[in-house]
Length: 443
Image (cartoon, rainbow, N blue to C red; front, side):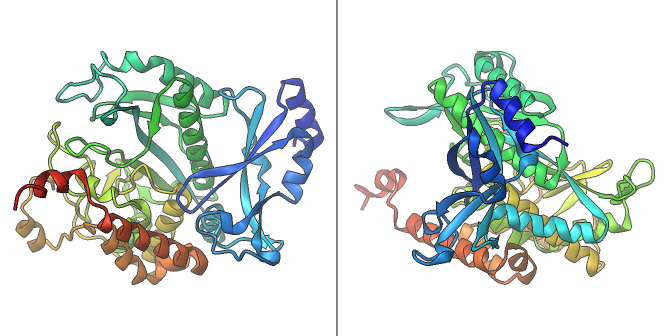
């Protein structure tokens, strides 16, 4: 095992002089400080200090010992940053008054992975982030590539090479940080891309997603671009999802959610998926956490013919129109969008899955048809419910769901609900360009 002294010496020799002590706020945004390499020991043992009430979602006071938030570095996450020569990132856990802070998103996830570990299980998660490359012009944000205009742009090998500098720098940088890049593609909207990399345990996957976002923003900024994980920037095109491929593994190294050949859901797997479906309305609040998220989940058509986002609470074998798509050896949770906090989303889905296991819940019948084509009345007859249509409705569902609330913890849950209610109110008061154009001279 590498000691702190050895790591400092190795980094110093490689030219690293500064640490990025990074934590994640309630919104899933990377925050932190630059810390000299010489302070590595202090960062690991005591942590970098921050003003607690200056961080979104802490609810910490302005005075007293609980006003100080410390980010303690997790040495297992240490990685030099190729896109920032001389700097190395260390993901931090939040501590307040000498104890783990219950409203730190990373601590929230660690509490849920500990529940799995108590049962001898480990959740593997492969996260697929979709994103847009935009430019800010006089008319607002637009796709960075003016020639990216196909009616069905998925997998376009004309526009994909035009962004190869950004994509190559991002892939090379992530590879140097230990990511196993699997593929890169142009997605189904103009200016939209996806980079896939190998799965890992839930905490590592969440840490990597935050590093992915940090790299995307930094590299795009250098190139004069805007890296965007906004769920739905363009009304007539698909939005950006952040699909989670999930599987539960035992201490024996065997996947325990699937069995048989082809590998289908085991009893344990069915119960887990049933729990995810049972708690879908509440999970929606943390997996689709913005007002804009519900434009992605609307189920409306797009220029490409589909949105690729679920609108109903359903599951089915290799069914991309369902919220849960079951595959051989894993299932894909298609609800989260690109704005989701990965720590909170994973904590919520673990809690929901464990509730399904503990109550031996059974999922409804699998859906093999195209749910986008089904009429609302037909779905209702089959007992298939819609996901919440607004952030306000999702927050209502969250407040009724003790399982998901308990997973978030009392402090974070209260802060989250308050922040999101204010977001809904701010949006309701805003007068949009659409409203002015429709109503200003109409009556």
